[in-house]
Image 1 (cartoon, rainbow, N blue to C red):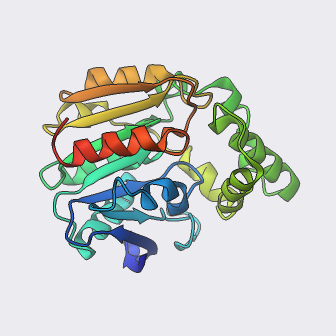
Image 2: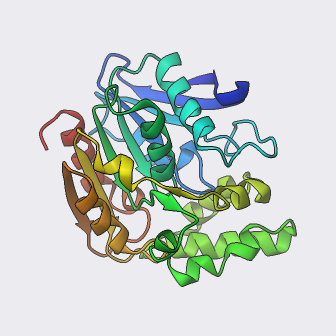
Image 3: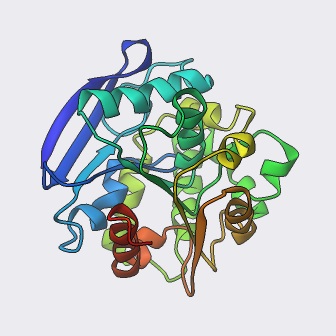
Amino acid sequence: MREHTVKGGGGLRLHVIEAGDPEGPPVLFLHGFSQCRLSWRRQFESDVLRDLRLVAMDFRGHGLSEKPTGVYRDSGIWAQDVHAVIETLSLARPVLCAHAYGGVVTGDYLRFHGDAGIKAIVLNGAITKVGTQAATEFISPEFRALAPGLFSNAVDESTRALAEFMRMCTHAELPPSDFYFFLGYNTMVPPYVREDLFSRTVDNDDVLGGLGIPALVVHGENDHCVFSAAAEHHSKVLPNARLSLYEDTGHVPHWERPERFNRELLQLTLGSI
């Protein structure tokens, strides 16, 4: 495992890790809401993906990246963060593999930098819009009901909401070791960061509709956070998309079904799907 510090938008320090073959085709992993690079552990430990160059960043406000206030609502600065990682690490036409809110960040990047430097994208349990009625319709009422707790500065209220969020993420109950692993890195994200992420108004349908690169749209059929209608929408908007629905799977297909997910990611990266 190799670690990097990358200066993103406004000079903010971003924590980035990489593994696999340094000369292999690159994949840049973009995690979800309140997550971090550790959510991709089952990709970084995969023998299937060992010949790829695997790179994962902690978003601003997440993981070991810096967490100042007031720097989370501008699409341009999110685009700068992703671009900085690609440029600093010299990632040649990476696949952008985005989970959940990472789809919004993917749209931020593509809006400002286009798809010329990107090989393909993966939208995995993803959203690509926030702050509109159309965006709200893709998010489950159960997840939306957690918002006050997720944004609260009261430790007990915030922790209860995060614990419920963790339970909602998977179709089958998590073993305690995984549950507390997830809960631990979610608690590293300050409530003001979580609130700012969902205080934006972003709709990336226009960007997605103009892409000329392949896309893999992955979604769990038992996702209790983001409805599968979001994946169906993405598969229609994206010109070159393949939809892959996972049975008996919740909001984290890459964690619950890593064998299938990793195989499909490898095929996409190598250009065979």
